[in-house]
Image (cartoon, rainbow, N blue to C red):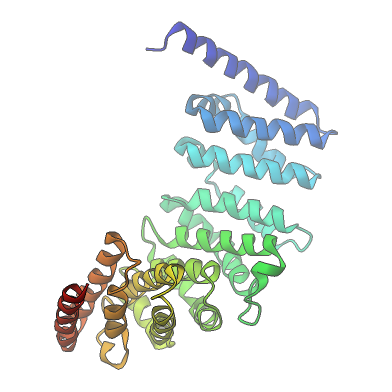
Length: 346
């Protein structure tokens, strides 16, 4: 039961939210004031879940949706989308209210408009991320609205294999690409969505090319997360990835990182990321002996930079290798011997 002090605070917050909503409605010719009001609403609702519920009940959520759609001011559109994303991210009822075909169509329009700024597109992608996260309905809407196709187009076109230095040249473009990667991960995972996994597998050749051209963590991590979640628990998609040479590329990448990991902790951490991706790809694959995955995992396992959780990830991958192909039992025995020798001389 709320104390008198808490009730007073709640009343003050409700009063503030009513005033802020009125400010939004009557400051249409003052975009800077609207932006400030939107960010204040975002902050208030982030700190108090009851505030988010109340703001939705007084019609604030739908008004901001309309503002994001109709405002002629880019700064207001960006702030409105940012606020919508924040409200939906912290409140499942707000997420459900916003998860409509209409909003997805609006976001599709923004993302395909050549006049949309990079930041406006990034805010639109943020809203998509929030709407599809842990939400099967959102995952369906993102596919049926065409937003998933747009995300995959952005994934392919923002960074090319010959422009791995985009991170150094244009940080805003990279931030957009990174947001796209995170959203694609949410589209296929939690809950697992077979239809979206199948659609996302269409960009595997491009993801493979990027992994061949760069070992920068800022590139490798998002792509590995995307690949790992897209193939997870889906033998057909795993086979697609292997058929385009994806497993071979991950194998070569692991070789590079493992070779340079003994004196470089960041390469070690990245090698573990690649290992987890390999684990998702090889669960149902029986063609492992042609690769050097297990010997490389053996080398990586002896690295001094590994923490217990990372060691466990590597051992788990080795276990899955054994399940997939009995011929690899020999390598597991070799690991055992190597570890005994390492401990003996440490």
